[in-house]
Image (cartoon, rainbow, N blue to C red):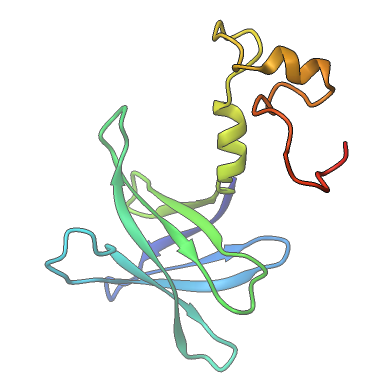
Length: 153
């Protein structure tokens, strides 16, 4: 979803706006000059209520696997935000950038997607049949606890 745009002003500085239901900010990009190849390409600055520029994030230059086209990717973070705002900026034909947001994929969600399915052709876990008969489920498979006060199911 497009949440803003930035374009170069007469002074050569990229300036624009981001707007969502809860955020309305003017932003600018300041180029980072570093010999470190892992350094961001730009710092993201936001105009504060007191009309001063505050650094709120960074954008890294990445390249599309399919087309090789460059784009910017990073996040905006500030104590006033409930969570970081993950953004990407895609260059347009006129030299401006469209800014889109994305919700990061949680690792737990990725783990669930990658977990073996019942019909994936893998053999069952050792002891799974016996655990199922005891009502412990296939993931148990480790036998019963020898603890005096074992967890009851």
